[in-house]
Image (cartoon, rainbow, N blue to C red):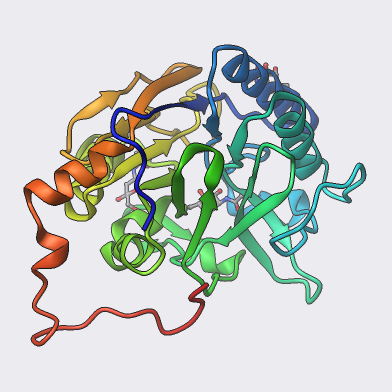
Length: 300
Ligand SMILES: *[C@@H]1O[C@H](CO)[C@@H](O)[C@H](O)[C@H]1NC(C)=O
Ligand SMILES: *[C@@H]1O[C@H](CO)[C@@H](O)[C@H](O)[C@H]1NC(C)=O
Ligand SMILES: CC(=O)N[C@H]1CO[C@H](CO)[C@@H](O)[C@@H]1O
């Protein structure tokens, strides 16, 4: 388990960008936000879910790109324009980036909702394919089936970020509703920070967004950073709640925002993770003789 020196602060930035139908423009917007975050001293930045593409299952296949497996060393050329931007900006600025999520097309044609994380050298250090797909059919209400357009990932994802003393767990949106994923990132991988690119809507946002971020932070005693796209009420598309937020291991909201485009900054004191875990030692007092939680696949 990583333990940062007490008082060791790192700066995180959540880029709450407005996503439009033009992939090229979205890529250049994200690049602009990331440069601004780095110029303001962020050591790690998070992009929203689905930051290069409208959040609409009919768009996923069209916008999907081929993405390499992690780890993958920096190279000046990558077939994915979205990933190339992430790794170029990371390398130029020396800032780590949890690259939100984008639609990924696998060699067999399957499309995944995938988050690429790159370190400050531009190397891909983690790739998370959304594990829990969002399928709902409310009688007389909404009908949204991600599994019509996407395939599910099969791994819990976390990566070591030695330059900031962090182990970062990554989940995408709906993944935050499944406490097991966060618990395993914390317990099996030693995460002290969880990053969730997410796009809750105008019903689930006010009801559950903050609650779930705080819940995952408290039950795992670590930092949680959740990054949403900005709200766009101009068209017929998906309306995101916004409110990108960072919560500390005590459950306190350390930084948040409204629905507008912008960057949320927070100073994380990773020493606080150990402090809270010592004060309320739930991790040492588990009754593993009564219950069990274990990774079935994918332990690294
Ligand atoms: C990933 O899944 C979410 C639903 O939680 C969806 O809104 C989003 O558009 C998907 N993103 C991509 C890039 O496929
Ligand atoms: C948001 O999603 C929930 C859960 O699927 C659904 O019940 C609700 O109607 C949606 N709200 C809006 C405003 O689309
Ligand atoms: C936030 C932002 O600047 N988004 C850009 C995404 O791309 C569109 C064009 O399709 C621009 O108009 C937006 O400004």
